[in-house]
Image 1: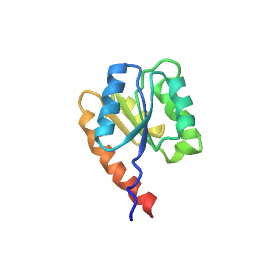
Image 2: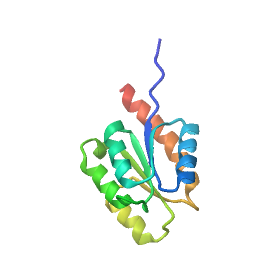
Image 3: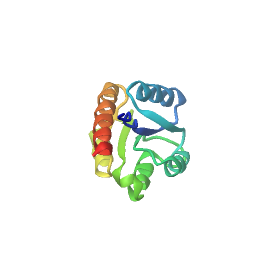
Image 4: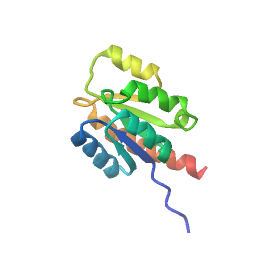
Length: 135
């Protein structure tokens, strides 16, 4: 009997609780398992190390550590080097997008115009994650 592949685990970090809740629900509906949700960068980093998620969705503007600081801290950790990181931000400036990607994010999405892209990335990631786990 073949076991069902493990769903990818996600950590969500956004200081606006309504957005964090929405992202968590969308991730679950897309086939992911949300293992933690944080409302500030310090809490997010602590939860990242405690849960070791497969992926992180984070905002840039958060108290404690901002999103760039959190991204850098994640990428500096051993587990974070292989983790999918999606920045979901309300900043639309191209220079910010370039900085986020240069600092190691896999995707940088604008909250108001690219939210639906998150719904495409998660199933793609889940499929590739399942394939790598079975290999």
